[in-house]
Image 1 (cartoon, rainbow, N blue to C red):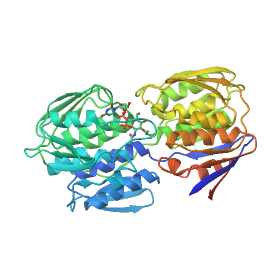
Image 2 (cartoon, rainbow, N blue to C red):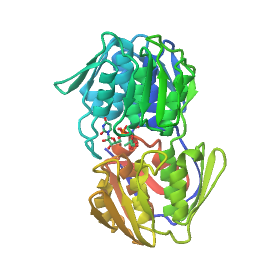
Image 3 (cartoon, rainbow, N blue to C red):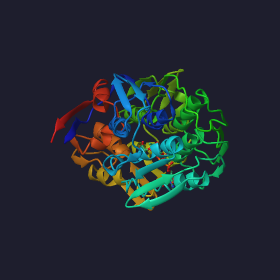
Image 4 (cartoon, helix red, strand yellow):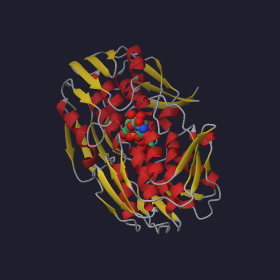
Amino acid sequence: MDYLKTQGVDTLNGTIKISGAKNASLPLIAMTILAKNRVTIKNLPHVADIKTLLKLLSNLGASCEISLENVTVDTSKIHETKATYDIVKTMRASILVLGPILSRFGHCEVSLPGGCAIGQRPIDLHLKALEQMGAQIVIESGYVQATAPNGLKGCNIIFDKITVTGTANIVMAAALAEGITTITNAAREPEVVQLCEVLNASGVTIEGIGTAMLTIHGTNGKLLEIDEFSIIPDRIEAGTYLCAGAITKSKLTLTDVEPKHLGAVLSKLEEMGCKCSVTEKSITISPADELQPVKIITQEYPGFPTDMQAQFLALATQANGTSIIEERLFENRFMHVSELQRMGAKITLNGHTATVNGKTKLSGTDVMATDLRASSALVLAALVASGETNIHRIYHLDRGYDSLEKKLEGVGAKIQRLKE
Ligand code: EPZ
């Protein structure tokens, strides 16, 4: 297994190019199941989760040709509608194939994703909505077995909770359904917006894109002609590198980024004393003289993203004063805390709220990554810790960050990927 060996740095300097968004790529790859033509997707990030989903599609009979950041997917030869445990257990977002496969083929089996480090992460809302659309769902031997012998029918769905992949799944199911589907309390994340925009350009009229109320006019089984498109920039990758600039008191410029997707993150960085100047496709962060403490409550978009909570918790260890960080979306998303404490951070946990006292000097040591965003928080802490930090189990990091150590090395970080 790989690990990262890092040394604390004085400062970083330079420019980092942001890759395509992992969480936009996954539903958009699943969406190719709805197409009659070969679909070319550009600006895909090189991350493990994308490879996993492309492998899943190949296992179903699709052909996926990858070249650099592009992939061309042809799903016309899909002959299998079962997403097996061996793949789904490595990536719960595999559930995103359920809606499109069921909508196109009338039957689908997807292994239950099983537990996840950050929380129980049920899929009850996905399944309840599909049943409302006419699917019969049986959970048997660890699999969701879904059939819709008479096809899916449009109806009015109201999500009890805002669910990102739940919204994506139902939008894709509704795309080929008969009639009109409305989704109330829909997720508004940019990744869901791009999925709706691509479908809307492919013959599925969708109203309310970007709002919490979506109306999808199904094609009644008619497959889609989907023109090539490019994945939007990864706002969480971008936010992570902005935190790298803030925590090391460095001026960094990010290119190929979408500043309007980072409103809550930029606002919190400015609250902490940083300056963020933006152009249409770039953000330059100038560090605070002294970071100020901050209060953060994670929310669905456009609120402060839960996927940036761990990174800001690491940043808060370097702020002068007491920061309060409340995690409202997942029940167990503070596993980075114990590793940060081992580096000397002064953090107390009380239920879903972390209290961080700073400014604390961090010391390098061996630490273990536990989940994707926790891993990036450890990298940020390692950049300012005295001495050497070795971050183990970075397969978590590789799920969602494209060439993280190379991008950081490119702006002066002392970071190497080595074999255990
Ligand atoms: C997506 O996960 C993202 N993953 C997550 O990013 C992100 O943290 C999350 O949205 C919230 O923004 C992808 O897009 C691939 P949810 P998702 O369904 O869709 C509950 C990362 O780091 N819920 O919006 O699985 C759920 O338990 C990953 O890139 C139900 O109760 O999240 C959670 O408390 C981590 N029943 C809340 O809703 C359901 O059927 C939000 O979950 C579905 C969800």
